[in-house]
Image (tube, rainbow, N blue to C red; front, side, top):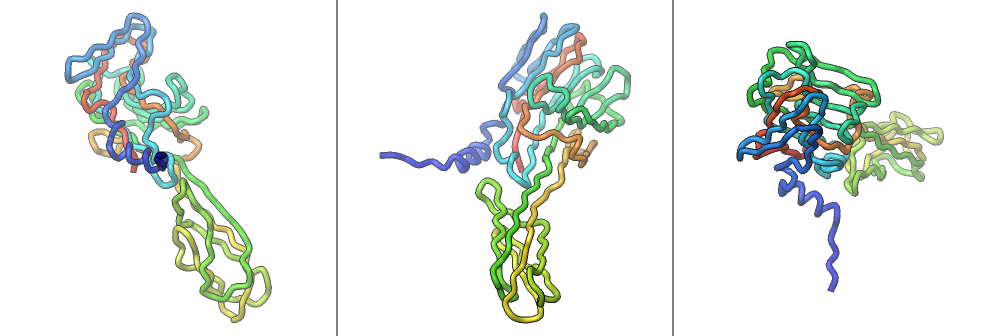
Amino acid sequence: MSINIDEKLLREAIDLLGISQALPLWYSLTGASTLTYDGEYMTIANTVGQFSALGTGFGSPAYRAGHAGHSLLVRATLKAVGDDRSCYFFFLEHRKGEYGEFQGFKTDAGAGSHKFEFRSSGTEEEDAIAGQDWTVDTLFMIKHRKGTFEHNSDITGAIATGTAVPHGLFSDGAGLTPTSVIVTPAEAGPIDVNTTARGATNFTINFGGGGNKTFSWIAEYETTALCEGYIDGALKASCTDDADISAQPFSVYACEPNAVARSMTLKYPPGIHMWSA
């Protein structure tokens, strides 16, 4: 006897069950740095010149986050011990050390330099975040969506007004409702051409002038790239510039001092909580 398993449905079911909600799965200790756990906090004690961190491992984000129209969301409760300068608190990178592809919270050496940085292929935007004290338990959250573009085109046969035309836009087997449809008569005669009833499978072509006519069409689906940073549930930073927003998949990292001797903590559980919407 054999059992057929739909891989897509299985992976989505795993996401919904929340198997990936209590992380990290990975840590990096360099030099004489240490990792301890007291039943409530995981603590990285970093040494000078090192970049120790906690993380989820490469390629672990929720499966649905790669689908058109879905966002990856990650959050964790963190703090720096003593002071919160020169630290990377909570961020996304493809792999640890790939700073050219970075989305996340950090502070620089100077006081009052709390920031969210959006960085992709060397271009970046930084949003300053005022009034922060990250030496106390702070809930950080990142919402990420890379812009998606899908398109299809064709020429209809001779059709009457009100005919439904299949557009063929799909993502992972699911139909996408077009964000725009351009229709052009392929012969003389049609007037007042327009489209209605745009859906996940079809759109409808309407026109005046009578008879059956032929049309060329282009259907497109597009979402805007978006990355946002939240502190204790409040939106503090936002970017929609596609040039500054990296593509998925990511690893998620926390508690990385910037080559300074400092301890940072991750509250565990829940650890790094990851889901998609």
